[in-house]
Length: 379
Image (tube, rainbow, N blue to C red; front, side):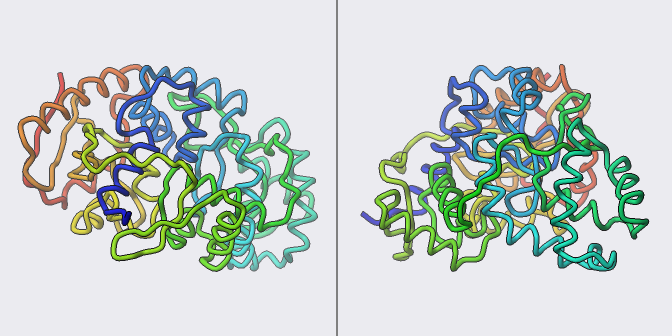
């Protein structure tokens, strides 16, 4: 059977726990959805709020504090929160991308240090940062250790390419605007790079499949040839299968992966900024209609908190004076608005105990957004 675009949409929603809220612990939930984009500290919390029933944010606080879930620079060279058990293989698979993006950058090369120098420094910095260190502390220590170098430079490159994670701090979402860094406690992945890539690709298919080689490469910002090689190795081992997608596209999936029917009901959701379900594909039309892509994904990389209606992005939302302002890019039905209003009431109650005006610093984008309908919900 050839899969349709709607099949793919429902598969993503099902695997990302967006067809219904599930009763899962936060570590199991994060493992199921693979990775939560975490540039904004609130986003992992809102991602799980959309997916779990009930969701206690204190459970995620504890998982971060216990390092059962860790936050670091990984996929697409951005901050993600992942199951600590996945971190070693994910980080190993990402090494060519992370090192090239940081150690080839002028901000590092102008320091006069070589890649070999950076490799020698990492174990020393890991020991120094064992109890958690701020950017200023590590930079001052490095200045004493190797001499004063331009900033950002050495530490900027090491903290994003090396095995460093963000240590939880005070604040409503476990992490604040001034991060503290610590070495990852999990043992490094010592196997070949291709084995780590296979692990990453298989986990990707579990959470986001069926998908193409380009989709999987986009997810991790790994080149297509090694991604395709990993997929084919998984097929040969019986850990993945090929499927036919829209237009005859070659897709891959894990055997027995959830693929709901095209007519599976998809409830409305108020998605977090940068939610991974929107970003995990080269072909983002799976969830974002092409006409709306540049509205939701701004020119500087911001991905606005989105309205999901019938499984597709239909607009954006923001907090407004204790309520939720919803901007729809096309007219919605009364039933759609009723569903969004119910979600808004629940979201307002959730935010009240953490940060009622979440994402407020991104309000500038709303000045230029088109709209078919704007409603203020909740309260």
